[in-house]
Image (cartoon, rainbow, N blue to C red; front, side, top):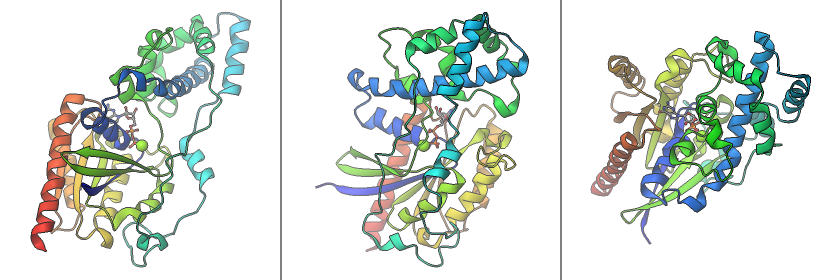
Length: 344
Ligand SMILES: Nc1nc2c(ncn2[C@@H]2O[C@H](COP(=O)(O)OP(=O)(O)O)[C@@H](O)[C@H]2O)c(=O)[nH]1
Ligand SMILES: [Mg+2]
């Protein structure tokens, strides 16, 4: 039986936690064989549905008409039957307050689950959605008004703009809506599928079992991270470099990078993680090297002086870049393990 290393992946919503796990699966798991890709289609349909909802709402805002009244009726029905998913509202309604109330930073009194051998996982949680059919999506996309609205996407207001996944799938809409569509690896990496509850993913790499724990990143969900703190070998903390310019979806007045730094501090100072090593992964394209460097320094200031934090600046959807980052992360975990054995 190989040894098992538990790795906890944390960070704000949309910081790249689940994409990191997809990259692990790509490079160290089954690599998404063709026959295993169909399961991603419903998630792509969800991303397209959310993007179409934005287009329809923006059509109304920008005063762009449908080509005829029949299409307009279809548009109204679409919005009514397949509304946009507001993830943080859904998460809150699912679990209003089923976890202990400790703040991340304190950890002064142990949450009930800390002594449990393995904290509870909820891998079967899925969003139940009324999904449109491909025919319905094709019909809506065929409307001249919808296409005009897409062409004017640069005019969309910040409070109602296309997500990165939405932009990507609209760019590739003809391929995605074609019959016999099979998602590519890039399509799979671009999917935005919110993580509900806590999920674990097991990888067997060089005769070592890695149990990677993926969690939801919204503010309301962070109390649940504590349950896993005591038992993990390493924490991989994700922060989006785009966060300097974005606000949280669940708290529109809070800057994402500021929130990320604050959360990182709370996790880094948590007493249950006193001896746990940290890997900080800053994701998204980092063309502006000096900005990325500056942000990295900010994170390094938000930790106890004696705590070692290994940092990687990478783009989580870039498979080449991630291959290197992943092998570094795995090597660090092996090193941590060796050091632990050495200290006994
Ligand atoms: N441009 C860019 N997009 C990313 C990066 N990491 C993740 N994404 C995209 O951001 C969205 C959310 O990523 P996900 O891994 O699900 O975030 P999570 O909420 O932290 O699990 C997905 O559509 C990803 O394709 C990155 O490094 N660069
Ligand atoms: Mg996730």
